[in-house]
Picture 1 (cartoon, rainbow, N blue to C red):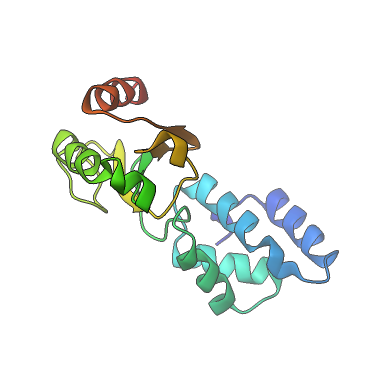
Picture 2 (picture 1 turned 135 degrees about the vertical axis):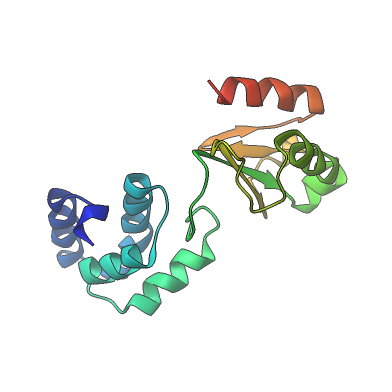
Length: 158
């Protein structure tokens, strides 16, 4: 399990957790560190996070499966989250989502053959004023059109 995080990072998280009255509040931080290191959070990662924080693995799993930005299975190098909230839906997110599927040659939840992109829906990106919107990594792109998507994907492939 320790190959998911280096020993210094594990020790640092354990020290921080020991200083907190409720170490559970660090679950997302530990899971994100594992994901950043490994690309996604395997079962070993859930076990490691539970061990670090001194909480049952089921409590870590509950958090890991609740947040759609924590990946419990392998994903591409970049994950595209397409907003499907009511604001984006009203402004054409369904068409944008279909365009992305055709452009990338994948269905929702799949990864391109070259491993570059995984396509996932997300319930809200908080970019209602820019609907329809999507997020790649930590960057939000709004006012999407097929032409804009082509430009974004070209830049993201670099």
